[in-house]
Image (tube, rainbow, N blue to C red):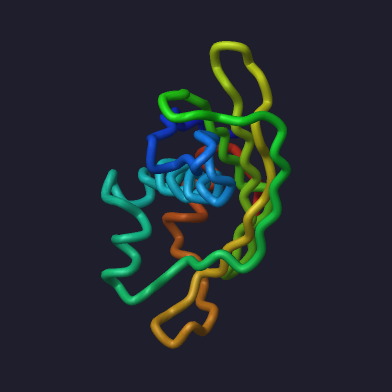
Length: 140
């Protein structure tokens, strides 16, 4: 089941034309991912908690489709869903919509691999798998 994170577009998220700069959508995916997994680290920032332990979750593949612009001050809803998870990897889909009109703004998928300090793939922590199960997303 998807997890919803409200987002607000800041002036710094926009380009010279006043529209959201497209890489910022991927930044919001990370915001949603951290929000999704916050129960796994008892509310501590998940990626920072794992970094302190010597682990990272870099993106290895990303795709997106953009359907409508966002501007500074706009609010949107980001839905994050884990659609695939393996021993050391997971893929999340994201959908961004404008809550005032329910307009679909952007969507796509990002795949991540959990790695140690040498960038070798390592199994996802049990609490990550537990969080995915608790949210009702894919079954590993």
